[in-house]
Image 1 (cartoon, rainbow, N blue to C red):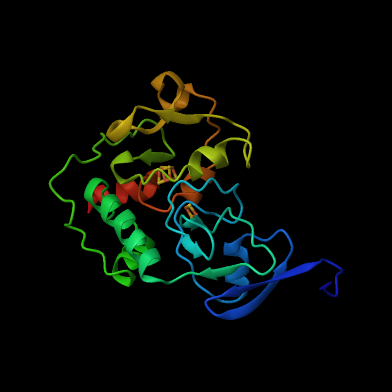
Image 2: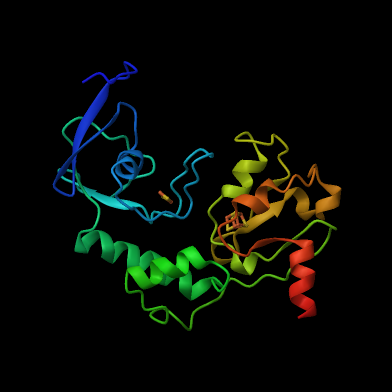
Length: 219
Ligand code: SF4
Ligand code: FES
């Protein structure tokens, strides 16, 4: 069905309702157009979706596994359910695992999700924590990767999605994996231009302006 702007649209069944969206939309796009709230962490509207957090997982009828709504295209006649017990159970486990390893006290959106999905934050408590020293190595921002949920947004915004600076990369393995600079250099010794875009897209308190950080320390 063409729209006024001549963009073809598709129709899917979302939680039992027929929803129209421009062809090429993801399930998440289609849901948001219809006012259906699918939770996300790694997704950001201005960045390439990389589907690392899996919180946006939904059930697509006919698909054996749950699907990440932020990257899976909505197709004509697809039947999608976003709030089934299976979906919500998967989201609960993702959030419980995050809560067991990451300091989320400055991640209000994630805390809201924990309430919404009835998360037991202590379910996997007692294991290894992701603990890193606060990195205060420049006059503009501070990095505390103990609060990092590994969404990749900062790396993407620093790279070809926006800034083309490539100051950030990924380091470590397993529980020690973290955002890093190349050769673990201090930020002033990297290609960083201190644009602040990484701080702007971080969904937690892992990246923070230096002024804000210093004020908090004084308090
Ligand atoms: S520092 Fe922030 S933006 Fe970067 S990966 Fe961690 S949580 Fe995401
Ligand atoms: S928001 Fe879709 S995988 Fe993270």
